[in-house]
Amino acid sequence: DGPVIIVGAGHGGYQVAASLRQAGFSQRICLINDEAHLPYQRPPLSKAYIKGSAGPESLMFRPEKFYQDQKIELIAGRAVSIDRAGHKVLLASGETLAYAHLVLATGARNRLLDLPNANLPDVKYLRILDESDALRAIMPSKTRVVVIGAGFIGLEFAATARIKGLEVDVLELAPRVMARAVTAEVSEYFQERHREAGIRVHLGVQATSIEAEGGKVTGVSLSDGRHLPADLVVVGVGVLPNIELAAEAGLPVAAGIIVDEYLSTADPDISAIGDCALFASPRFGGSLRLESVQNATDHARCLAARLTGDKKPYDSHPWFWSDQGDDKLQISGLTTGYDRVVLRGSAANKAFSAFCYKGETLLGIESINRAGDHMFGRRLQGMNRSITPAQAADESFDLKSALA
Ligand code: FAD
Image (cartoon, rainbow, N blue to C red; front, side, top):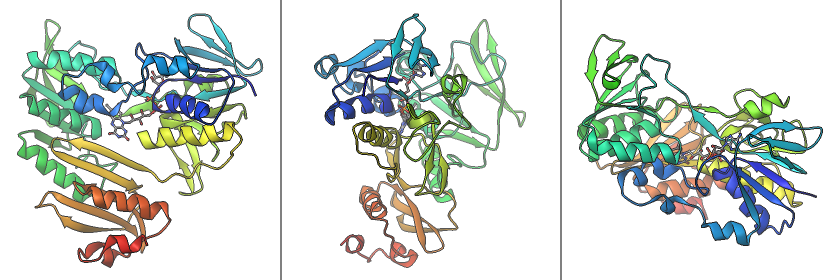
């Protein structure tokens, strides 16, 4: 019993606070927010928000009144250290906050490009609202963008930039786009679709330098000796989890803040959730760090339940989505470690799903413009059930029958 202090007011941090109140938690809740906005949704930053003209308020989870009504104290500032013995968090302002339980929901930050000229104003990143606003503001004055990194965010931005009339080149070191996250079938589909839209996708190459004149970007040189002209560079080469606060407080960290299946760090009074957490997963038999809204919000709900007396291990079924141009990719489960991919539907019709199996076990489904398959996957896998590869491949097999 006592105050809960939450560091980070992103998807995870906001949800812990909201879920605690929903569960009847009556003690003080402070949400430490180092961004100059009310807590907001991140996915539209590279999708609808950057494409459209809606204001920042369209992204907010809740208006300011919600926090007042719910007595959730939004504290503008940055946590700089944790005094574990004294149960206190120190903010950059010098203020200290006492906690009974501390939640680290610090998320992740952009991995920065280590190249000459990478700090010029025309080299942009896309993680926070201010960065999306900055890009939206300068795009109309730009004609050619080089996107470095063909992950979800790089490709979502590339598709939007093309729709807005820019010339677009995408560079990717791996032999296919989104290589770490999706099957070859899905990579190939998106490569083709982006090329059809007029985006030049360069695979197996790296940016070696950014050229500039008078502080303005003029192009990007590639590892294969080519040079691409550009007046804008957007970097999407992944993120680094924000683990330093935990590490400096002596908590174990690796590729994330290490937590057990209850999302507790080695200190029972400190938990970590969302993008920053490397959590033990009985479901997947190992440690995972995931970067998704589902992961952050379900972690938050699981933790809020524990803090209000309903202690259960975290065991939610993962899912994810990405919108690129007119195509919607949705992933149910974790599609890594498969040895067989079965397709349902057809790429030619721009609607198919890749069912990923290890032996006869369904690991996950990547669906393109097949929302029904995706929802089926979430329900089926949520029930810890499977269908056979032959059933998945057979379009006449009624998926609903497997849910009965
Ligand atoms: P975050 O939402 O990153 O929040 C962490 C917050 O903590 C940040 O505001 C950070 O500034 C703050 N913070 C860090 N350190 C401190 C400190 N010391 N003191 C105070 N505050 C601190 N996921 C999907 O599932 N689908 C999508 O389509 C999708 N699209 C995305 C598009 C973009 C452009 C981005 C950037 C991400 C996208 N994601 C998507 C990923 C998803 O947004 C993240 O997984 C999710 O935001 C993680 O939530 P979180 O609370 O762990 O971290």
